[in-house]
Length: 629
Image (cartoon, rainbow, N blue to C red):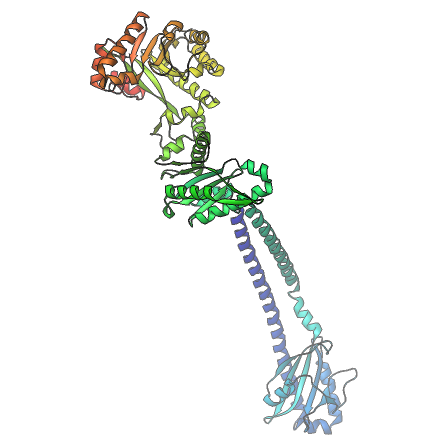
């Protein structure tokens, strides 16, 4: 999971937590409000009880009763005082006179009670509203009224007429008391809220910095093209085979930096990248590689690769750039490839484009090379990492092509031919022309040779009646590590080494025959034989027959195949080689016997041994031996 996705989930979780805490706070506030409503309801019941008591005591019009009976009025004041608690701060009775002014009728205060008929100036219009509607109301006191939380205005009604207003002031301390029920939880919730908000702000800050960092990782700051990291992530989401690719390198770009300075060089790169963007179709991606190298990905459906590559190459090489009052043009080395349908990774494509680009530069640069009609297998099997992995996992086997006695048609030997095993499809075998040249001269080549020799010796051990030959390049014999490997294997299997032959293929002309002769002598220490492969072509010459101690001549297949097109001349050549070999007491093998016609002519020439697809294809050894049995 990427950091981008992690941040997304963290934001979701944080959001849910904040919503939960807000809901929790709302619930606590609601609970506190319900408590307060219950207290107000109790206050209304309290006011109703006081009202009934006063009306019962008055036994007639309340105003007349209180005006005439001073003693009773004082007694009622004392009774109101007894109703005072920590909950009820003040209780008093008001009357509205003919002028609309409110005057005190009763006051339950023990200290400094207000005298009868004293004016009262309410700060709320609700007094008038309660007086007229005869419905109780709650008035929240303003900041100017100390120690009072709420005032309950309760109308005292007799015969449909409002006689007075009973006012009960609920104390501020009681409100604080009610709030204190949930205050510990509320403090905790607010603490969590604060923590979450701070965490959210921190997360936003981290995400913003991550976005800036990520942008710098994905977008080249100089050219505004993409980076290799973006390329990797792009094909984690998209299929490689839906695109084609190009690799573009500005030739001799260092000269621009040297002549005009790096700042001018950067300006050229910016303009070059911008020019490419204007020429490419919509669904295209430009990735900046090393220095002045750009890797371009283009959707197959948006453009024909060959046409686009030619247009791009022509336009970019004809474009002129003004640098330091000097007009310059660029030459490009450019390769393009139609990505095969079977391709799964972009890195194989990059390698193929690199190879083509190297080829163009080797020919003098300033050129365009298009790779077309390549298979996905060819791209995959030429991947060095793929070959390394195959050898590490020992996904290697040998096929064996029989060599026949031309006259008796009996198999006298098998030539071991290496194949790698496809990782995804173990039934598919990979021929050596895909990978052999790529690993030649490396430790992987030594590892491969060791595995081949082990498999061949295992076969010789298992089947004591057979002989096997293996191929060696002449360059292998100049490699000390390779010679050590072979001699070590020969010594380890010295009891069966006499049934092994080495077919030597020249890759270049022999300059030191004494050195090669000494190596041949080492290989033959335990009875192994030496065969000179592809004799009659390349660097092969008759000096070998004089200077080297060999046992077998394998006539080059290209000469043998000429029997079908130029039989007379070819027969003379083959007869000459065969006759000379017999004089040196060498065994002779005709390769590439691909038809009955060629086989019969080889037989007529008296060539002792034959090998080719007409006689037997390369197969697993068991298939020939089981058939033989």
